[in-house]
Structures are given as structure tokens and as C-alpha cells.
Amino acid sequence: MLTAFVCEGKALRRYAPSDEALRGAAWIDLLNPDANEARRVEQATGLRVPSEADLSEIETSSRLAMEEGALYLSMPLVSRLDEAPRAVPAGFVLSRERLLTIRFAESRLFDAFAERQLRAETAERGGAHILVGLLEAIVDRQADALEQARIDLDVISQRIFREGQRLSRRGEDSLLRETLTAIGRTGELVSYIRDSQLGADRIVPYMLGNTSDWLPKDLEPRINTLRQDIASLKDYDVHLDDKVHFLLDATLGFINIAQNNVVKVLTVASVVGIPPVLVAGIYGMNFKVMPELQWQWGYAYGLILIAVSGIVPLVWFKLRGWL
Image 1 (cartoon, rainbow, N blue to C red):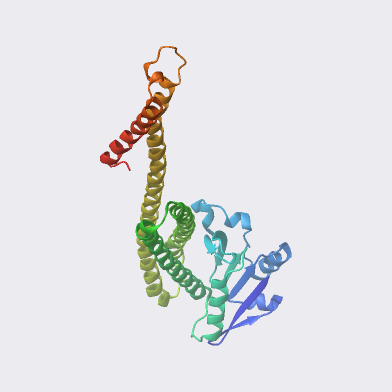
Image 2 (cartoon, rainbow, N blue to C red):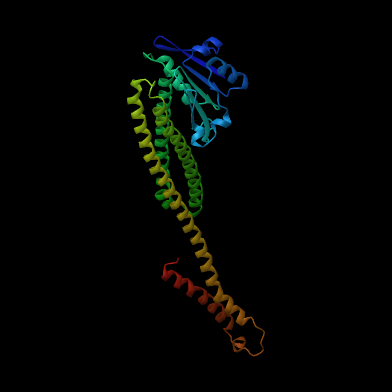
């Protein structure tokens, strides 16, 4: 799908993607473009439209390149349209005249940014301004996602360190299982955001270094602020990653404690059962000469001996603090 945004005076207007609109557009957004749409954009603008495979490359030379004065940039974005987070490639082609954005998944961020740009009025609507605005929106969304991840991790911490102390054994097993799942989901989201931050962190200095002769001067303060925001989010991301690993280690530690408790119970049961079995085995032998066989209280004596031999280990384990 093609969408052309044309600058008219101080306003940005959305137009149907006619050839004339494509030639005069300051921003062309391509969502899941087919071969015909890519060809039309290339003919109208003279810019190459990267494929999804091109945008998925991870080498720096593939994500940051310059061809005939235009910058070809790419980075992964985090999509949560279908609940589970996933990384989707996004591409930006920036020239003096316009910006191309290429994406292969729906994005509420792009749609919301476009609506804000259509409602706002500014004196300049060049491709560089739109790209910087998009990067600001992406970084702002990353910050919101990291804040939500911190809240989720705080909830997990509250659950395993406080609520877990008041649960039964069965409830504890269920809590630990749910906690592992929640930590895994949060850790996955933080990992995707880190990849997206890395892409933005590469794009900003590359754009500054290769557009110094035509980049609008009024963008420099915004770009410097953008770099500072990215740097602060990187530090915050490291903090969250450490917390994810801490909670994961703590949860696994509680799981090990629960497993040790099970093993301890089985050990106590096996040790307690050995003396009674030994006594029963001795008096179950069919020898003719066994003095206790002739006792009037021999049967009661055997039962008492079996009970005492089982109770003594239990008392010993209790005194040792194993029970």
C-alpha cells in the first residue's frame, strides 16, 4: 500500500498515490509494497526501494549505506499488534527532497505519527524533519515500553518475594510456573527493544555525518537531544536486563528449594522406613529356634519395636530441623 504526503505551504496533506503526487511528495510511506508499487516509486523518485530481505540484514554496511547522495537506513521495530512482541524490519530512504519509509507490518506508531503531522502546522516539512520526528516517536515509544517492563518486573518481584511466602505447596508450584513465563515474556520484550535501540543509535550519527552539507540547521538541537535520550534508554535497558536476570535466578533458586524439599521428604520417608522393615524381616524368618515365638507378649513386643524403630528417626530428624 502506498501513501503520499505532500507539503502544501505550512501543512502536510495526504494524497492518493498518483504519479504526480509521488513526484512531489515529501514523504512516501510503503506498507507491504508489491513489485508494481516499488517500481512506481522508483520511477517517480529515482530512489531504490529496498526489499524485506535487504532490510532484515544485520551487518552495519547493509543497514547504513549511501547511494547517489541518498541515505539507505534500516532498523528493527517492535510490533505488538498480535500481543506477543516481535521484531519487524523498517527502512528509511532519505534524500534532499523526500523521505521513503518501507515497512512490512502494520504499526500504530507510524499511523499515530502521520495523524499528528497532518493536524500540526510548521514552516518546514522536509524529509529530514519527518525522519527526525519519526525517530523521536520511536524512541519515545521505546521509553514507554521500558517503563511498562519495569512495572511488570516490579509486580513479578512482589509476587515471588512476598506472596510466595503465604502459598501452599501446590500454589507455590503454580506461582513459580507463572512467574517463569512472565519473566520470559518481559525479557523477550526488553531484548527486542534493545535491538531497536541499537538501530536508532547507529542511524543518528550516520545521518549527521553524511548530511552535514544539506541537513537543516534547526534539526541539530533535536538530534542532539535524540542522541541523549537514546543513551539514557540504553543505560535503563541494561538496568532492566540485570533485573530480569536477577528475578530469573531468584525464581530458579526457589524452584531448586522446592525440589530439595521434595527430595528431603523422600529421604526422610526412606530412612524412617528402613528400621521397621528390618525388624519385620528379622521376625519374619522361619527358624524353629526363635525365643520370641514362645512369648505370650511376643506379638505386641514386635509391634512396639517396629513403631519405636520408626518414631526414633522421625524425632531425630525433627531435632535436626529437617522437618
